[in-house]
Image (cartoon, rainbow, N blue to C red):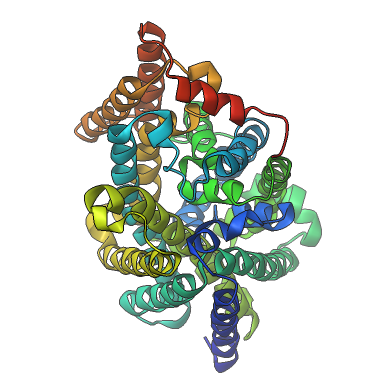
Length: 492
């Protein structure tokens, strides 16, 4: 990286911190800090939902998959996310917005106390928070590797840099800082992604025609929709996981719907995010797909995108592309920190320590900032030790995706009246059953990737539905009232 690249990157960080300082003036209480006061417009909520689904892992772990296995990455990742988010937009997103109005929630797990009971709520809150520590730490490690490729700085320096910037602006600005930075990051991502796309096209043999001609020149299997171990079974497993994740099982994505100003706005936000996932990754991922033509026999395919950027981009543009990668990672890690903080402050601490109940607005806001700071700090420590957890792909894909299902099944299906008979016993059984399947599969050395990813969530789903179906207990009145309010057509 040259001086101009560092200037571009520094300007980007100054922009982030400036938005954080601006957002500070809009945050008067914890509702502003965690849900933006329920005032997010559909376009801002939709862009934020979309951008919050990316991280530096796309340019590291996913770039490695694109290099070795090709177009299948788009099929099992972006395409399945698009379909899952579209389904969520119609069936789940409006319920999150109505839930905020009906139950005055600020965290995604807050409603679980009403839907199930305290034990279920605490189990999901604790397990989900622990999972997110590892997931977010892996994303910090991913962006540090990219910075190392571009500039030669150490992995430790990169993790500390991105972690500290994220820690500062999300701690002071809350969700308002998060969503507006998401929007700014989306603009940076568009500029950098289109620039990289055009530059790579100009350097291919057929120029712009290579969009259609390049696929026959790639290694065998790289142009296929499914390329082992990323089989059609794996894609269906990811579709199932992504439905529960992008519906709100990934808590920071639920927050985008919760913070929308109405059910109709939440639905439009989900549709916008779905459209962006269908189209934008085709442009963003293209340089990764064609990397084998320019960089043959890489010993570490995860470095392919960074090396492509260094090979083809001039000074200044390299800094812009790196800024876009930072943008993706900061978007996801900061929104994770904000949402996990809400779960800790609203659902965990008050049940552990009664003194945290019924706090004044000032003290509640101070606690929110302290929890956000502490969670972000812990994820930095995990990022520094990512290699101990199976590397970046292991942390983000294997651990997070496989563990996400068991806690998201009762959370998402609990919003739907079709599963009203599945109470706390069904919820806890499904979580424990899914986690046990995950542990058992970890002890089996040779297994299909589709089984490792899909079995835990499938086990949870079957247990949750079966236990509910066999239950003889009457549906509690509070659950019936909850579902009646969530399916209302009126945005009250």
